[in-house]
Image (tube, helix red, strand yellow):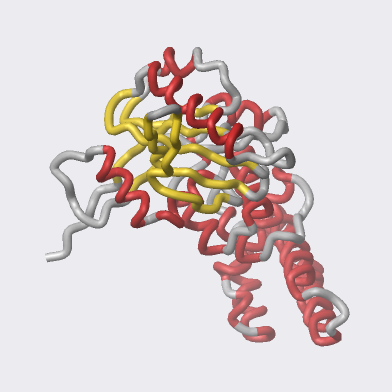
Length: 302
């Protein structure tokens, strides 16, 4: 008896390979469409024949078309089809490798969040894997997650996760502000990626002459996507209300002396050891966010 499901899969593979050979289509688009259609057939065949059909088809297709159709690969295609049913149409800006990294995720809002940042930050599959591994979505604030649920866009400060993960190269008995600054500097690229996309380094201990006093911003960045400066202040202790006044002074100075008329207002990020959620709640300022830091455990090599 002819197996129409298997024949449909064969046709998808043959047609997809033909399009690639003809060079009339982008390879990524062909792969996404082919894998989606194969996944759909596998999902329907599973309902008819049961889970074991994937192993059977894998055995047949591997002999005919090669190792790209082993059981594990067919299961990815089926999972891809099921993911698209939950999260909307296939986005051809993403590669198949991107989608494979998203397959283990179950939360629809989390999947859509990572799809957005792949496009926003032009993430490679490796960079995406690092962001997922760091649990970036789960570190977003409740307010940010609610906005995503409502399909609203996040501001730059709302996109900053908490805690910010810091990875020292060695252990310290006490983590002072100077040491925290140094840890960030040693891993500057990773730190900027945690803040979000489009950040460029401007300076460390950036000097401001306010009246007859010298003040120093811990870190100053510029976001090219949003055309604005970002002041970062690091506290090795619990957040204090005076920290807000300090960073606002620095932000206002940057707006007055560094920002030009084409750029947007400066934002501020206070990174602290701990913050009382009630105090943070009453900082009603969409230009400032207060987040905690967490020190990654140092693995000592003997």
